[in-house]
Image 1 (tube, rainbow, N blue to C red):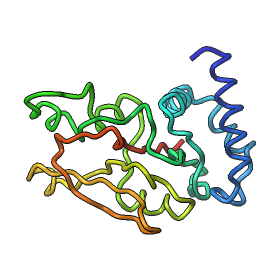
Image 2: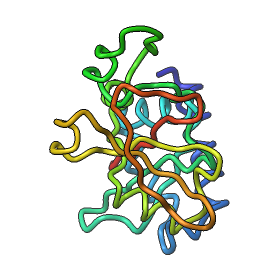
Image 3: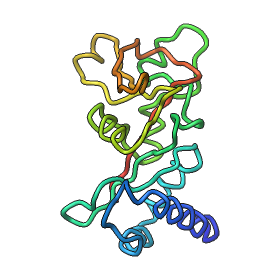
Image 4: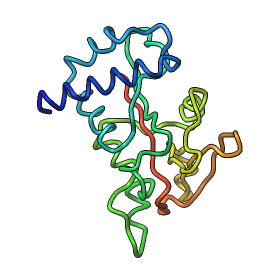
Length: 181
């Protein structure tokens, strides 16, 4: 990452951090920045989250070890991560109209984890996300072994979890990720 990109990213993260203090009460930006400045891998992952429309922000208090957890906080599922199957197996099982990628592979390439259903529900306590879109979430192996995958959204003031074939993809479905630094 070039110095200019790094500086721009840190400015963007700081502005978002300061605008959304309810997501990380009691945490000071100086402590977060100190954890980020010397972690090129984490900065690259946050850059990718930002570049693909995730609008990452720190959520929750720092971990016991002082770690900071960042999550995609864009109002809708990130635009640069939509129209993807759940995983490689789902992608390869499509006979036609294959998308370019899968959610699991994109998350791994970005160095982030897809949200679990529990993390998705926790995120929804900080705001209203995915009121027009939906997001794949980590799927338990038993469901995945049967060909399914889980996704979530928020409708009618409630968070819902649904299932679909892992090979499916829609223009309004992507995935959200998180990263602990």
